[in-house]
Length: 218
Image 1 (cartoon, rainbow, N blue to C red):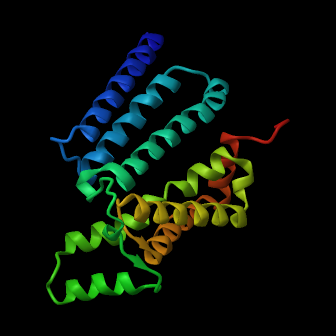
Image 2 (cartoon, helix red, strand yellow):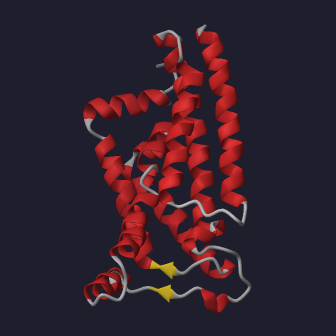
């Protein structure tokens, strides 16, 4: 019975991903943040059933790495879609390089959003979407990178990797016409990821994170 449940869950996971892919890429649909979180939660739940329903603790430990790896690639796909393709977030490639503004003054954009809200020029929803959204966007990296890659368990390498990756995204958004290059995005993206990373460093949690990709011989 448990084997049947795992197989049904595997088929349901694949079907959900195909449906998610269709709704994300079909021009006539706009998938907002709530729906994105909903799809991700159901995907993670079904995938967990497919991997772990009825298995022994030893088997569960062996399958955990593959489970987290699939979630990581799902997250990367969602993130790239939000950053470069999703019309809900104003994305879409353009050859007009003037589309992307450049801000190299730290905290200026954050101040401008808060000031605009204070004057009643923009809604609280837009402030939260842009500021909290940037905090959340790369936050899962604080778990995925140290869990999957042992060398990312050093805060130095973790911070350097994300700083380079986020900078590359910001520059790519300007040159692809899909957004702006803003140092405040880098600050918020990195801050969100570091908060999760530091939280994961709590000793009981950190042991479980490190077990996902153990050292050779462990």
